[in-house]
Amino acid sequence: MIRLKKIIKLYENDSYLRECSADVVSIEDFNGQPAVVLNRTVFHPQGGGQPGDRGIIVCDDRQVDVLDTRRDEDGIVYHIVSSTDGLQEGSDVMCQLDWGFRYPHMVSHTAEHVLFRSLYLETDGAISVEKIRLSGFGGKIFIGGEIPDFDTIYRALMRANNIIRENRVVNIIFVPKEHVKKKYPDFQRAFAELE
Picture 1 (tube, rainbow, N blue to C red):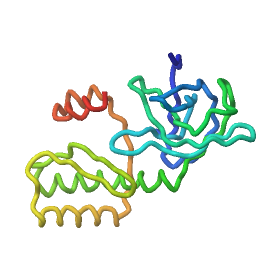
Picture 2 (cartoon, helix red, strand yellow; picture 1 turned 90 degrees about the vertical axis):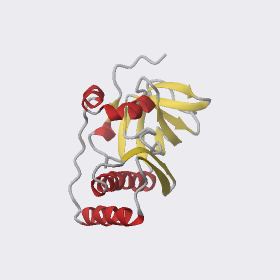
Picture 3 (cartoon, rainbow, N blue to C red; picture 1 turned 180 degrees about the horizontal axis):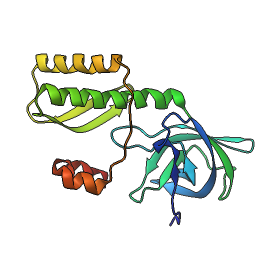
Picture 4 (tube, rainbow, N blue to C red; picture 1 turned 135 degrees about the vertical axis):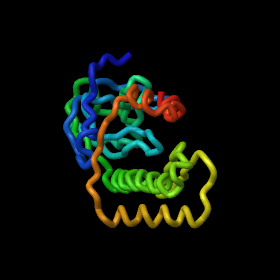
């Protein structure tokens, strides 16, 4: 069992940060795959329809590929690696994201939020986004409510494209789950899937 007070999730404060130094907290097995737990990380785990980050971990003269990043129910971030050779508890490492993988997913995720809000506005709130699943550079959007007609979808796309062209500033806020559950009970199913 991992005893760690807090993993510093650097990606929460700076999604453009591409590398960081860290210490290896433990070498683990995550669902049959070798994994490394670090005390701090720039690697965002899979979640919210987004794939986990990839990249490398460098320790002394060794480089280990990070093939995926996952999180368990306790919030521990696991870096699924090609090998744990040369890594041990307490090792000082350098973590580097595969920015060519992260960045397209990151901007796509933001664009999805713009599209979802545009769909919501164009249907006067008659639809809700239930789930997002991205894979590669494609994906699926699952919506609740009646499927909008083509004209409504087109207007929503045009609205979203105009917002994106405006190059608006994106602000990220973290709202406690309990607050959202209480204020927006429709999110119960979404939270049930996350827990």
